[in-house]
Length: 438
Image (cartoon, rainbow, N blue to C red):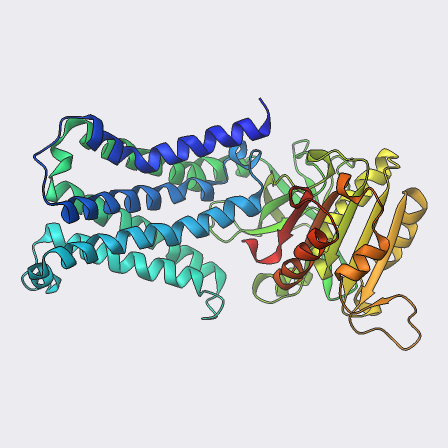
C-alpha cells in the first residue's frame, strides 16, 4: 500500500475516533433531547476530550505511524490539535453558562457538586497544560521538568474529565456511549504503557557504548557509539533517534538527535550535537565507555524516501547533521546523483564538517555553496542568507523535478521555504526539519 493511502486511512481512523461520541449519539437510541445550546455544548465537550486523549498516540513514537507521516507533521499536528482540544473543552462550560447564567454558582467550590467540580478543575488544568506548552520557551521552562509535569498533568486532566462524564451520566447511560468511554481510556492507557513501559524494556535489551567524543567546528561535538551484544539498528540517511545518555531508558529525560554517520556503516552510529545549553552543554564531558540507549530510527526525511533526478540540500549551522548523513551515505554507495548543498553559517570558523565536505566533493557529484553571515575580509563566496536570488542563480532549469531537504533553525526555514516556491519549486518537493520540533 502506498504511503499516501496509508496516511489517508490513518487520518480517517483518527477523525472517526474523535467524532465517535457524536456518531453514537446520532445513530443509537438516546435520552430525550434537551435545548440546542446545551446539547451543542455537550457535543463540543465530547470532541474536546476524545481529541485530548488521542494526543497520547502521536507522542508514543509508534514505529508504523512514524513511517507514514514525517515527524515534523506528527509534532505539528500534536501541537495544533492540543490547542484545538482546549478550545473545545473551554467552549463546553462557556456555552452552558451562556445558555443558563444560573450555573455560574457552580464555579464556587464550596457549593459545587463533585460531578461538576471535576469538570471545572479539568478545564482549568487543561488550560494550564496547553498554555505551558505553547509558551514554554518564552517562560524559560527547563525541558525535562516541563516534560514530566506535562505528562502527569495530561493524565490528571483525562481522569477528572472521565469522572465528570460518568457522574453527570446523561449520555453515558447509553450502553454504546458508556462502552466507548471505557474503550477510549483503555486505548490511551495502552499508549502510555507502550511509551513508558514496553518500549523502554525493549531498549534496555539493546544498549550502546560511547566510543568517542569528537570536537567539531562551531561549538559542536560528535558522539560515536557502538552496539553492545547486538547488531545495532539500521537507519536511512536523514532519520533521527532519541538518546538516553547515562540513564535508564525508563527515564523520561531523552533527547532527539539526527544521525550524522553513513547509513552504510553497520554497527556504528554518530550524532553531532551543538552546545545550546541544558543537556547539550554536557555532551563534551560524557566519558568514553558510557552506556547509552537509542530509540529509533524515526522520520521520512531523506533521498531514500523521495527518489529524484537530483537533490538540493539546505542547512543552517548544526542543521547540517542529517545532511551530512545523506552525503556520507551517498558517497559510500558510489551514488553520482547531482547534488547542490547550500550551507549557511555565521562565519568560516563555524562551518561544521568544513574539511570533510571538501573531501566529499571528490567522491560525489556535489556543488557546495557556503553562505556566510559574517565573512572574513578575503571571502569571495556568497554572503548573507540563502535568498530567492541566490537560489535562482544556482538551481538547474529542471529544478521542479528535484527534491529539496532543509534543516535548520525555524527563522531560516520560514524564509527559505517561500523563496524556493518563488523560484519555481513545487511545495510538495520541499521537506524540512526544524530544530524546534521536539
